[in-house]
Image 1 (cartoon, rainbow, N blue to C red):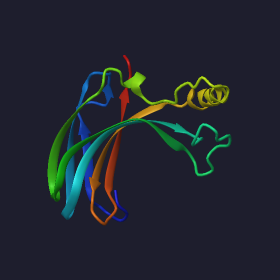
Image 2 (cartoon, one colour; image 1 turned 45 degrees about the vertical axis):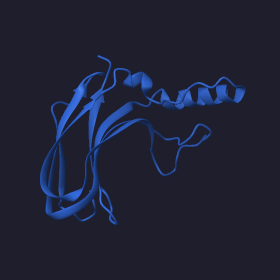
Image 3 (tube, helix red, strand yellow; image 1 turned 60 degrees about the vertical axis):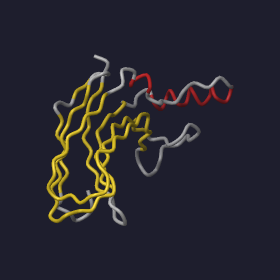
Image 4 (cartoon, one colour; image 1 turned 90 degrees about the vertical axis):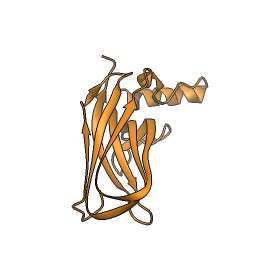
Amino acid sequence: MGLFRSDKIIITLDKNNFIPGEIIKGKISLDFKKPVFVKKLTVTLKGFIETQYRGALQTKPNPKGPYNLEVFRYDKNLSYEGEYQSEKLFFEIEIPENIIEQSNIPKKNGTTVGNMINKFNDSIYQNSPLVWCIIVNLDIPKKLDINEIQEITISKN
């Protein structure tokens, strides 16, 4: 959300734990003090790994804190240009059957340098959990976007 706002975006899901192949069903409640012109309203299913390292060749932790390495992203546009004040919108996102395997966790590289990078990547990512979330983004022209995030769990069982 923007700074110094009491505006609200609330994400309500049927449940918070999912398995690949299920459908995430949810409701977005918007409650603004005055009408807000929105260029686009998007719901995103995102997977990321929180790590201290930004890239494969970085050998020191990021001094600015954790870095979120995005490994999966699916955007669904719910609506386009319009004014919103007090609205309820519903959405569904189908989780791909192979979402865990499909996540773009750094892949193996067959070169000597690639093998060194792979060993380093393995040490970085092996203890980093894969975090999943639903993000609602209101793209507001010439102003800061308004976002709300809700973490979910996606596991094989």
